Length: 446
Ligand SMILES: Nc1nc2c(ncn2[C@@H]2O[C@H](COP(=O)(O)OP(=O)(O)OP(=O)(O)O)[C@@H](O)[C@H]2O)c(=O)[nH]1
Image (cartoon, rainbow, N blue to C red; front, side, top):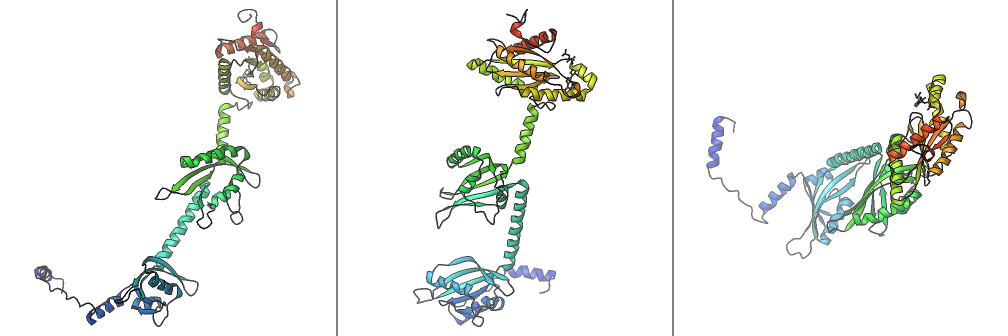
């Protein structure tokens, strides 16, 4: 019918007319057999019926043409294997079957297989297979999967982050560990030669971090996971920092299935973090503690004094006539003097003493576990070390020092003020000397 307006109207009015019901062929009739043959013959799905020996007893046109299967072509072993369905009696759906082809190609098939029991038979004698050729889709998805795995691998390389999982091997019951390529890289191991295991992994942990890591891992099963940062030692002796995360995976019934986790190389982050912390607490010129860090140390010392009565003293000192050094030799020479003094004085401190730059050409030493008299001993050592030999062209440089020890009820401000008063007195008394606050005649003296 041509597509005219009238034609369309007729089509509409045709719909209102009662349609003649299609006659259903009698089951088992020659008419039904012919119809089924036509349907099967025009199907794009290859249909094959195998007997219990794997011989094809029927193949539709698609099976013959596309797969070359049929009574004439013979049945490839991979497909003939489906004859077992007749024995097991269990249908299978969407089973992937790879058929090797000439020139190294592979044809990928998706097969539905059903046992076929005919009237009067107690057990299935045949198997009917519907076969779809999915080679194109399969290679497309396989390629896409390969590409996505490659992208994941590249992203992991950039982030220096790998993933792992630990599982129990079903056959042997053994614990197995699987690493992604980046983890081999982080641990400095060759994936061709190194088989990861939990024991080998533990052996790579920095000895100082092992106890902490063991404790965290012991807790991990209770907490369902863990996150920990620790060092590893690579076979070449190199030390790397890693951040490790692990999580337990459970199956649908809540049983522990496997442990999954990530490993990230954070060595650079750690170094940067350490450098930032160092800069926040150190003076860039002398590389000693800065004033902020000294204040923090003083607060800790005072807290210990209040809680446990642990005494401490401070030594405040500055370079004598330093203005003249700058004026005569220049600011750079002055800087070099400060740097050299810092080195010399650091060498005469006890392990529990701290030294920092208080500001300008002024330094502060914190002498722990000692009183003002002990602080004065340290001050004397500092004085001698500063003046022990000339500093380059500048020559001999001296320092004046004021000492004050903590006392009950004295605040840090008071202590600093007392040390400052003592330092002022040392300057006034002719420089290059130590003055204790307790020895001051008026105000400070007792
Ligand atoms: N080169 C250099 N000089 C500094 C630095 N900080 C402070 N100074 C100088 O140290 C000098 C301190 O001078 P004054 O406070 O007059 O003291 P002084 O000349 O040492 O004299 P007395 O302390 O009385 O012995 C000033 O010239 C400051 O510019 C620094 O980081 N580098």
